[in-house]
Amino acid sequence: MSDIIENALILLGILMEEGATGPKELTAGELCAKSGLSPGEFDQADNFLLNGHYVKCTMGGDEGGRWLTPDGINYYQVQMADRYPLSQIAKRVAKFIMTKAKTDKDEVYKDTICAELGIDEKTYAQTIQELADFGLIQEPFKVDQVDFLGVNLTAKGCRAVRSNFKWERIAPVQHIAAIFQGPVSQSNIQAVAQAYQSAVQQTVGAADVEELRATIVDTIESMVNAIKAELTTDQMAVYAQAARELKSEINADQPQPSRLHGILRILAFFGDLEGTLELGERSLKLAATIGPSLVVLLQAVSQLLASLR
Image (tube, rainbow, N blue to C red):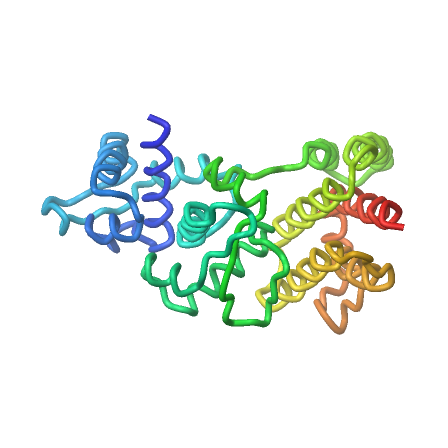
């Protein structure tokens, strides 16, 4: 039954992305083709959605229409709340890479992915960038290069595929964020400070270099997702670029503290705001939003530098 539900979520995700909420709709044939499911898998998932009143349809076999109901939209949002916010094509590409790459040293080539999944080079580049933003594609990753000739998943990317893209959240950050809800008062600040001390000790106290790097990547992603709705597209591009640069720098044999310092100032909204994000007074509110993650990030980076000396 779990496979049917997971496949049903794929279909709902496609309908959501296509805006098929009525009167716009997709035909059953179009929906099946976009999903990458076999006809048998599609029929099972389609019946699950129709019987649950998550999707409505018109008769006509493959030409029959499919569109979301309000219950379907709500069901999808609830089910996807703890998963990576990836496009359906990004998930298909990640799954395809995992089936083709037999070891972590293998690469799956662009032409193979485009041909077998039926996507063009622009879609391919956008999709690989999307996966890279969440640390699911192996480094080194050149963001300005259009031709990503060969790619493979990180260990985190493989875990994401196996779990159908369930989000790997850092428990200490969640704990602190819960305390941080509500007004900024002296008692709240004291509670957050105490949680910081405990969380940082649990997160980086006994970590080795690779665990520290994984913690940094996970924390960066939580920060990006915490503020993405608050920034314009251009501002988000600046912030995402800083996040990618930090990921790249921490994977160097000897990360440069001065370079890390400059990147971290941007991620903390204390960098050259006028010349980059242009947030003004909003920077303080955004800094508070990412505060719980930021403390873990700074401690992990500090511990990483100490470990590499």
